[in-house]
Length: 424
Image (tube, rainbow, N blue to C red; front, side, top):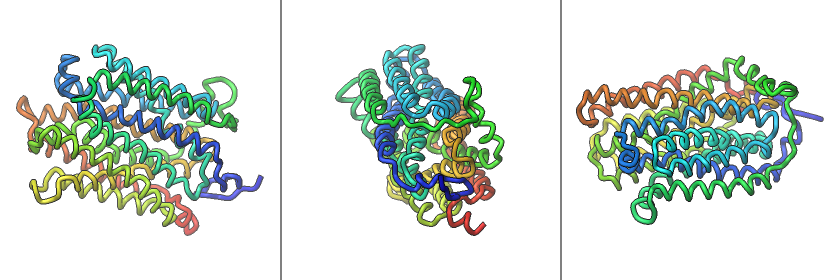
């Protein structure tokens, strides 16, 4: 079979054509990714209800919500290896069902059920993006891969935005917060059926993962022995923090306690960040494909994040339009998806699932470990007093420092875009 080199990786010639079966499966998987991202962000708009039902303060609820990222990080490794060994048809529907069960448990209203439910949601959700990228890698030609990955994340962040601006009025009028979780679980469970049917059964097993089940993790040796994989993972992980921690967990408390915004106004303004991702992910992916370079677009997006984050924390009220800075932060945050493209381009073609699993593990290990740390930092800075604007500003400098570090790491990443590789 003839092949060509793309980003230093030999890609079969038939990958230059679109594979319709995998593209259809990718669309269904993207719908699941929308739903699981909605569940990821929804707790941020029901903090008072969760605090009352579970008898925990905001810090305790924030810790509970953060449990999601522990299993998300761990099962990113597991699902990445399973995808390389078994293929999407055998693996992706299982992850979807785990999220459905986790949503139902979370809605029971007890602390133990909520903890188990949140852990199951994280475990199954790990298959959402990895599965979608696995299918996109096999369905789209390499010249369109960054765009497809950006559109995939667009689905997720649209769900993240809906988890704020749509869920808030829903649970305060149409249904209770428990019913929201049960209905979400039902919808997600129904999505598992067409995903199972639509996903092609064709799968080329990586020879390195053949044999015992433990050997299915063998591809990670190749991925994790590549220093570029760590640069991609750490860079993306740092760029995710302003959204996973800064917006989805503490965005509404910041707007209410720090800027004295009403609940409805805080929900609408916080939802601008994931809505910006809806624009930024496909836009920056398209620009990267169009320019044939990854690093300049990645660094430019990170600089936009830094400027907009500084504006959110430090600009006086009324200087910037209410929704613009959050939207710009979200657009710039789309740069966090480019390392997902780069890590696949700096590793062999037969470890794509493991490469996606590795970067997801690194990215969400950051979120898992730093979510409680950020909460404790806020509590320490408040020193028993209210979490007001000076407290959030002091904590926010750490988020901005992470963005600066991500830019430094991006400088040392290999340029894998077609034009950059051709000029190397």
